[in-house]
Image (tube, rainbow, N blue to C red; front, side, top):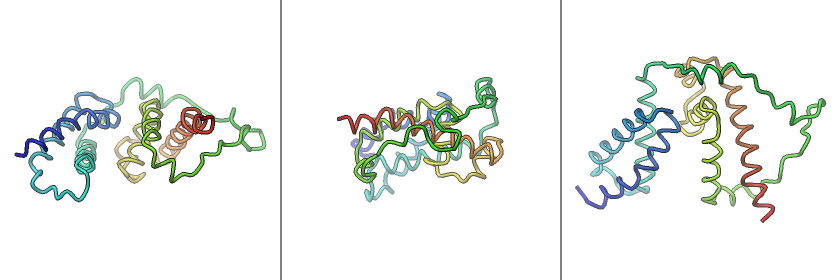
Length: 189
């Protein structure tokens, strides 16, 4: 076993745990999935061709381990999740009765240039971390794990309408968070 690969994997562990905790919302499950990921990476290190960065390869393994966990995990509904699901949230305060926004969206600048900035992804991660647990999980399942709506609904035992509403709410909250923590600061700076 190459000591450099082992050391690199050990250095990736905190980032992998952060991703797993965000998705699984359970420290024990996150630890298990990351351990499975690191074992798979160590066992498959000989197959790593170096065509991508090691981190990209390992995060890909983690992604599949999380999906596997979702498939075999028993359904649990926490009291917090039930309270969040019962909350009714609107964005009426952002709109005129005519349906137009009170404040026009800020100019986000050149999207390609913005996406290239590492700091943007750090702010985005902070915004995702601030989402309520159920919204963050649905958003990450859709956008990061790239699960189809049908898979998300089956996994979380929700209707497609509920899923779309949750995705809308997550995107609106992310938009507001990014506008106040990233795009507003970029323009001001």
